Image 1 (tube, helix red, strand yellow):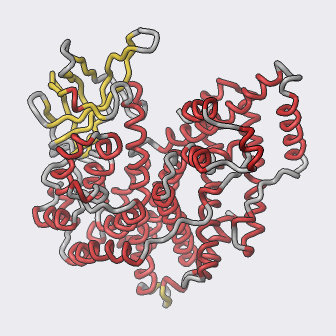
Image 2 (tube, rainbow, N blue to C red):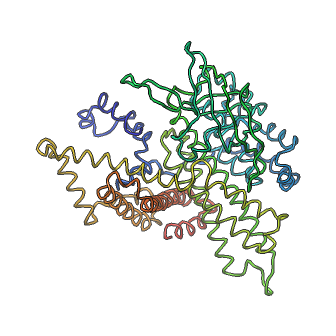
Image 3 (cartoon, rainbow, N blue to C red):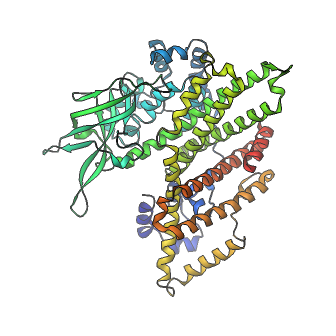
Length: 573
């Protein structure tokens, strides 16, 4: 998936002799490498540490962009902080009309829809800011809105044709119609390839007949439209008929039904149901993307969803830390304020560092997207894993700081804890995403190893490549080929950058060793793959934090000294 377009372009359009003469790549091939993630997380698996995508840290919003987001969020913050009753929503399981209307008035249903289709047209960084500010009030609202736009109709934004966008986006952006994303099935959770739902094309090619069921569908009971994934028969290049997943845009029409709203541990402001499709007729023009490309469509939609979750969880963590800090400053025990105890100070410091990392990841991904980087799937997966686990830690520690008071429902912290738990399961469980990160990175390394194996079959003809590879390995083994990350970071953090570079080399050696030892059997060594993923998370965390703190120090922002202290500890840990 990653290398195929590159191979085509490099085998037909790339001119190595021209590059030899000029000494540089042209913009087209540089962009191709960026799109492939060659300057991102992917290449740390080979030890190259081409980290240009992460430095400098993406620009913050312009004054105009920032003021626009603030103009939207200010009335929402006032209403939600004074009039919104999350406990009432817990009991009823739905938002009342007043708050639905507020969301519509804010334009919250079409945040990233282009203005020509009735949306706000925010860029990804503005969306990150909006999500961070507003979702701290109730994660159930986040799921309701996210299921609608981050994944529900995201397929139309990413892959829809002009007619589909003109017909459906205006009513979706206004909130007059609601969308849902229907992928999960009773027998296919994280294993999307195990989908049993099927769509059969009519003889005249005009209509698909869809049958199947989906489970745990957010907005399932209230949605007017569904992005549905089903198996379809597709003719391969050899002429055989094979099953491939296709994405469909399905209106709530005859044959579409849903079960009752499910009772859940948390996020009760969102509606979750089973959805059933019984001989549903879907016009052929309602295919999203191409027939047979449904898996690619689903994965790219989920990448967007994971990024949105990181933004929202940053907002939840910020609210939890504010509550914990205020309580510690006001609550007295043993004649002293809680905030005076170093044990409490350590808790809040650790919570603040986890929030700093999560927030840094959110704006790093939004910046990559706004800068035109197409392949950020590993960054999104790593960030989702980190943010969901960090948010659980932060909210749990907030409850601990409140003690027995935090355990009581009226404080709202136990609700926050129940709400945040689902994010380690949503849109790919963290266990599956860890395997995805490790195996994707190892596949990238495996391609490099196969090139060397092929070269060894003709050593005379490939002498240059073999010699360069041997030299590189010797240098790496004696520590002479350490990636130069220090050139990108503030001098204050050169020691951390040098340590990170050494860690990347050690990491890549481990990856290569495991591939050689287990070959294709590595897929069954989940414990080892989990450890590789955890190392990748630590490396990515350090890269993102070093990038952000470098910008803070260079710009001399008000928080620079605090950021410096946090970044030192984060990199050390």
